[in-house]
Each structure stands twice: as structure tokens, then as C-alpha cells.
Image 1 (cartoon, rainbow, N blue to C red):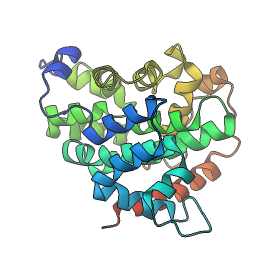
Image 2 (cartoon, rainbow, N blue to C red):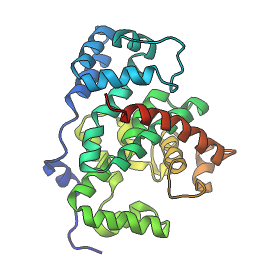
Image 3 (cartoon, rainbow, N blue to C red):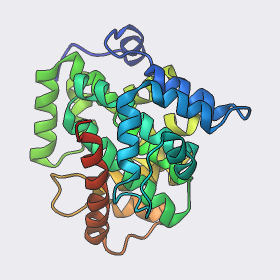
Image 4 (cartoon, one colour):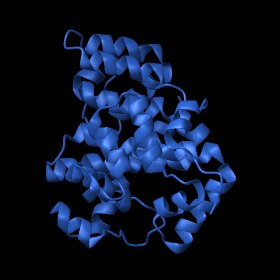
Length: 273
């Protein structure tokens, strides 16, 4: 539909407005990967960023976790949460600015909902680590940032057409740009040197049966569909669901549960300091 086609890899390499992974997230991941370090080092990193430490404490003391005691120190919060859950909060906050600046607030909110949905599904079906599922769900649409930055007006049209016609977004993106957010997102994941499972799920979350890790991708596929605001009833392709061998008995009830939990998380993350 447009002769201005994108070479995905060249575009990711040359795109100046997608910065390296936020420094606080890089440092947090380094601490978590290093078996010689622990909670104290992660607390030091978080304490440098007042917004992250404040919002982490706010979330820990909210109904999202439902702890019975008031937690007033970041060290104690990290002990209770654990390193991996703390990393997920850091990621959500560290990437919020980039997502809202280059994408939209709607993208960050959808990513957060999908992260929470993926975590809940992983806990229920025990097919992937819930903490990993949170990260995969949060970053599944990161490629949309690049398409929106390339041409915001055109990408707004793409999203409108997909919503109005209930057509798969990837097909419309390919028609207008010659590539799609799944391909670009996977390339961003590689650029950030994220784990292979994450890159794979970003690449195939619209069609998990094409993945070498179909069940992991399937969790994100289901989560993404369940939290879509423009779909009155969550639409899960029966052919995909049969291949995944995952049964969702009451999608609407599950959606309500996910959105209720996500609303608490989002409220705490959006509250001013």
C-alpha cells in the first residue's frame, strides 16, 4: 500500500529515538544475574531513583499484594517481594517514559495489563515461570514504538483500520509499512540482548503455533486477546487453542479478574509521588 518500505534490521540499527535499555534496568538485571550480589545491591540501585523506590513501596502496600503489615523500607519490600518481582516493577517504571514518549500512554497501559495477564495465566497453567511471563507480556508490543515513531499519522490510520474492521493488526502493518511490530520488536529484543525466549515470544505472539516455543508464546497470545478493550468478547482462535492444549472455560470472567488486578497496579504506578 506504500512504496516507503522498511528494512526492519536497518531501521532498528539506525533509529536514534529508541535508546539503549534504561540504565536502572540494565543495572538491576546485572545484579539479579550475578549470584554474588543480592537484595542490598538491588536496593541501592532502586534508592537512586526516587520515583521507582517510592512507587515500589506504594505498590507493596496496596491491595495488589495484600500484605497485612505496613512496609516502610525498600530493603524490606525487596525481601518480601523477591528479586524477580522487584525487577518487573523496575522494568514497568523504567520503560514507562519511553513507551509514553515514543508510543502512547495507551501502549504502556496495555503492556502492563498484558504483563499481569501473562503472569496470572502462567501461575494457573504452570507452563512458564510467572516472573518471565510478566516480562514477556510487558514487552510483547515494543515494536509498535518504532512504527509509531516512523510515521505517527500513518500508524494511527493502521490502528484505526484494524479496530474498525477487526482485522489482524499485523496484516495492516505489513500492508502500510512492509514490516510489523512483531518483527521489529524481536529485533529490539536482540539489540537489548534479552533472553531468546523473550525474543521468540515477541516475534510470534500473534501466531504462537509458528514458534519453536508455542506454549510460552501462547500465554502471551491469550493474555493479549483477553485485555483488548475494543473486542466485546475475547476472541481466541480455536485452531490455535487446540494446538496449545489450553482450555479457557470462562474468558469473560477471567478478563474481569485480570482487569481488576491490573487496575490496582496501574493506579499505584500512575499516582504522583
